[in-house]
Image 1: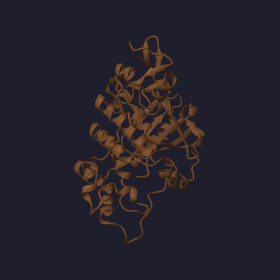
Image 2: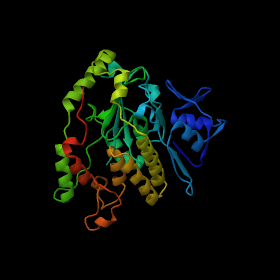
Image 3: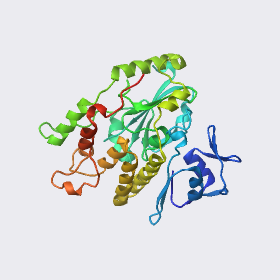
Image 4: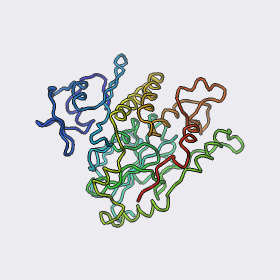
Length: 113
Length: 237
């Protein structure tokens, strides 16, 4: 996820990373990571990501922070449940992969290079 | 195929977004969702490391095949790269095409498996169990995750015009995630060498100014180093 400062709204963090804050800690599918850092309406990216083992890199003077994905189980996938995916089309309209629930989906990645 | 409740969703992984992908997407005259992934979210979320790759997701939202090399799907997706005028092909492009032709592809097998799954769903032998999906998914160490953060930051910097800083973070991503071809190809494609419709495929130094190339590798050198036959992992049913 990307942010312009190291403090982001809790809901923004949850939506961007797919992790949800519960009493047990930060949770995704069957995995929960206990937290000691406080989680209010705003979270401290560096503190929270540090406890979750999520990498953070930044260009502070330019105003860019990036939190990388988790490496739970040392795999790209934490679960076989397809992660949330919302991306724009050419016209800028957002498309939610979950809207295709009920269909078999081939998700095909390509590039113009 | 439409009667079986199947949908193709194509995703263009390009920091240049609409600007980079529009020509291909419009020429394809799509009847399916065609999305733009400027920060390579598909890499972070699904483990995509090269293109073209595909993921199968069943009707319950479960991944039944994790990201793997995939030939173009049976429907038209995007036209082939634009052709340079005859006789104007620089030697480098001829060499790249020569290497590309050596890359093995399991097109027939993959399409047959895809059809089998579209028709048979969960009963298909090609729909993998959740445990098998996880087992086959991309390994991701803490270093690799760190590389993903650098790459996402690099894309954001590039999009906002901070090219030199983007290069710093692309280089970090390349060092931390040596298995990702998309991390390298995306960065290489943003170095403008020459013009014309094939410029983004050059992905290497300017022949007269090799010292200006900011990256450790380039498409031709890297493919030769690993061997075109090893460019993508063989398809495992």
